[in-house]
Length: 127
Image 1 (spheres, rainbow, N blue to C red):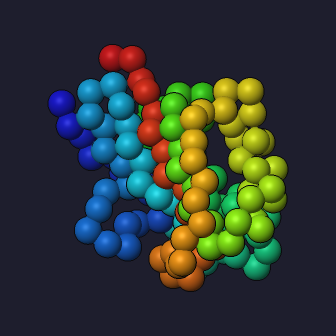
Image 2 (cartoon, rainbow, N blue to C red; image 1 turned 30 degrees about the horizontal axis):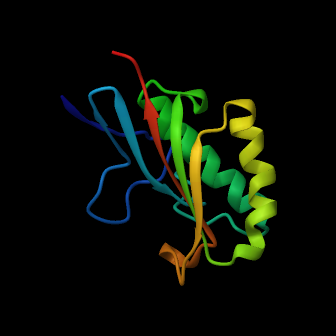
């Protein structure tokens, strides 16, 4: 079973990919950035604003799949500068807290639209 997941509360994909795909018990959420889905504008005046929008968009896609942050088993965080690591962790912990999934955080040369942070996730949902 494979199902495309789409949320009006998250930004439309900016390329040939889906916001998420459910395959069996797993939901694979594409990387989310700090884009306001209503206006298409980037929301990154501060790092706090940027990370909060990234997480808001990620949660919107999870919700469309019938999942919550507690269902997430793996995240990947992409940063343009590892100096952002501790600040990103502050906001990440507010969403995932005690149920923190496995994850990796990597520094990359660049991200779509010039953002500093992108986060993808894999959730597990029992059938």
